[in-house]
Length: 112
Length: 115
Image 1 (cartoon, chains in turn orange, green):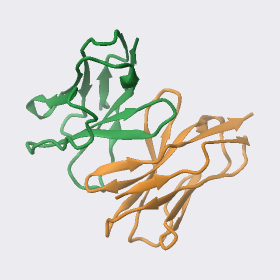
Image 2 (cartoon, each protein chain N blue to C red):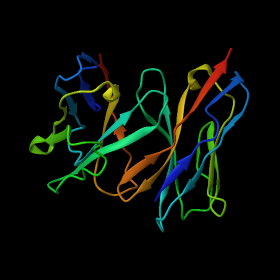
Image 3 (cartoon, rainbow over the protein chains, first blue to last red):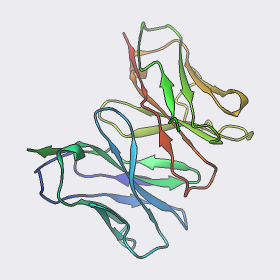
Image 4 (spheres, helix red, strand yellow):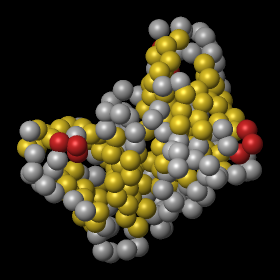
């Protein structure tokens, strides 16, 4: 069965700092995807970044990058030059068949 | 184009009443999902529709929960005889097709409060 674990329920960092959110997962899929979703106070879930497990190169989207360690089943998200608008819940996720399994989330506060 | 929309945005109901939550997916998206997000929790999968295939109902927590998708577009999630533990945000998502690589686009959710 697929499981996703986020060990940091809540984090706070100063604006412009770099922050890393942790995620570990377990999966029985041979080829799978990993995702980070952002949920701001508006409740709108937004895909931040996606990684295909068969690709060794870490995905990057502007200030967001991942550290994908396949053997360790680790998929952390790094946010560089954090901005006030990055304040949100962040969910790590993986797919099971055609569904997505989410972790419980990390609440991130960016402080001015 | 328009994103996924959900209505109502908020719903307060008395314990024991039935409620219907609506989801309008992005036009042309064949896959539609319902999730439940309880306070402080992640998203819990409820049900999945893909085209004309039989829906995957494996996540529905009890037989009080049901969903329909009419004409391959709009979906309605119905909760009968609501209980206080049903209080949560219900999120709908749609995507282009069945492949896992396709991105799911989420609606803003319906916050259900059962009093």
